[in-house]
Structures are given as C-alpha cells and as structure tokens.
Image 1: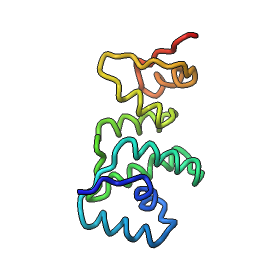
Image 2 (image 1 turned 60 degrees about the vertical axis):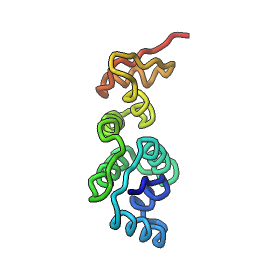
Image 3 (image 1 turned 120 degrees about the vertical axis):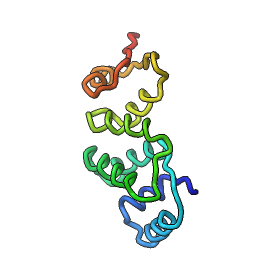
Length: 131
C-alpha cells in the first residue's frame, strides 16, 4: 500500500507532467493507495494558487480522484465533512480544522468571515472569539 504525496495527487488530477503522470497512474493501478487529509488540504491550495482552479472544479476533481479504484481517503468521514464545507463556501483548511474537533467541543477562532459562513455551510459549533 502507498500513501500518496501532494505532488503525486496533483499529477493524477492535472497531468501536466506527462512522465510523472504516467508513473503516478502506474502506481495507482498496481496497488492500493491512500490520501491523507493534510495532503488533500495542500492539493486544494496548489490547485487554487498555481492552477487557478475554482472551488467547484477542485471539489469535483478531489471527489473523482477518491472514486478511482485503488485510491481511498485515509479518513473518509473527515474528508467528506471537509469537502462539504468547502463546497458550501468555506476555505478547505478551515473546514478540515473544524471537522477535526471532538464531538461537543467548540472550534474557537478569531476569523470573523469563517465564523459567519460556518453555520450556512453546516459547520456548527464555530465560536468567534472577541479580542
């Protein structure tokens, strides 16, 4: 089994380096692979910053990647929660961080925009700190 790094996932999604994309595809075809939530977080950042993709396309690409045979999210429930928050307008990292809190805990933040958007995105228990 192989745990995939961000650069491997980006090659699978974008395919802009044909040689690396072929190697990544061969790896995925030959053995089960996992993708960690932190790798997905970095992938979202790379796809947005370097490739200028919008959130809807990025979320679709990540979902398509995770639907491939031999690729699984390391934490499927956490990944699904983060993707849902991202698709609803949150920053992927914020959605991922908030989804990792323990049940019953509040997610404390100074980020007003995140605290305002979170309930609309279905991310509950985000507490805006005043300061």
